[in-house]
Length: 286
Image (tube, rainbow, N blue to C red):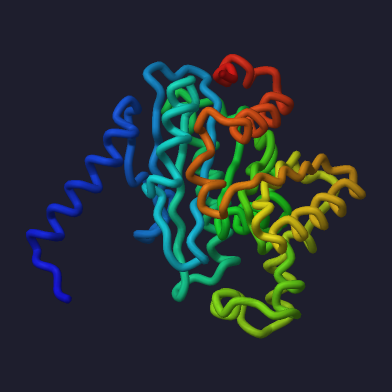
């Protein structure tokens, strides 16, 4: 059924009001370009007062094909909790399928991260206090950025305190492709084994990888199996890698993070452990 322009306008206004209501306390800088294409942009959510503020750098998911930096499940609960506490929250877009394959998307994420480090002082941020986070496909892209030296050079890598990967089931793409799998993986990774390896963060692990929190849904067996194998290999290399299984759906793991819950407190405990300078910016557990 064809929707009238008026209906679309009402929907857009309604959607904007929902997003604005949840983030109205935060000053927002939208569509900052870190590259030459339309997809290479990010939004910055600022606290009332920002001076040497820590930075939470967020990469949305969407099967490498859809999704947006402004989606409520990506932004709302996180901004409501952490920007209010003094964090700068940055939500990143990247080029997507079919024009850009996942490894190129990871390159976009690395480029955005480098831009943020260079320009964070302009927003009152401290580039030595950066936490990275990604959900689903975004967690896969971030896992590559944090493990593959070809994507993130020493300058990008130096100031990252840690990474939080939210329910990625694509840490070992070769494993996925060699067993029964959803068609979305074929569209993303094709049929070339070398490409599967290139897109598998578990293949890029090395001893200098920053600390990682690997969140998985206990309702998705493959997600927790992959994060367990990834964490165990990382630990053998001397990398701090912690698995956190939670009884939430794939979508809830993203949307509910920032709510007053044990899950949020566990994530904050990980952040707190990375650097004592984060402590003043972490709300007390209720």
